[in-house]
Image (cartoon, rainbow, N blue to C red; front, side, top):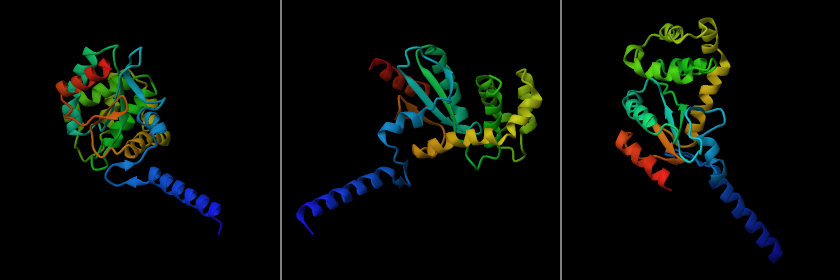
Length: 216
């Protein structure tokens, strides 16, 4: 084997190893997402933006489970932050239902079904404001969610059909798959401008992260 051929084969081998390393799944941290795809994985074009900044300078993303008690505990801090920074930050909600929560997927389906009628944010608020009413109940809470849809003035029959639509389920699972690729293992998990937020989701800590991002 000639020297040039050996060198070429060696370079190919190195390239294969590098590519494999870029795509390997890290059990502790999720799939290694190539840097060029990271921003798109954190926020998709169809992701639900419940607050929007015209300059797009700061984007906060939350992967959440509507039945998660920790998400419910973080919710008041998030709402306070959204109110204080209205027009200055983009706030994105992404689904990450936990399979062990009996109505996590039903709740996500309810939010997505409401989104089809332009009421995602209203249902998001409704689900968290009433989490203790429906959460951690072993029986399906679909009728509770239908009641919320009725209170929000939605077309109830359409809402029922959309909750059961496989496309709605696929949309929810697509968010969760992105979360898994990013290493999300629990909820709530936040990202600020594409970087994973590692602090407790208190108002003070979230505010600091937002202020730091705005100052850059």
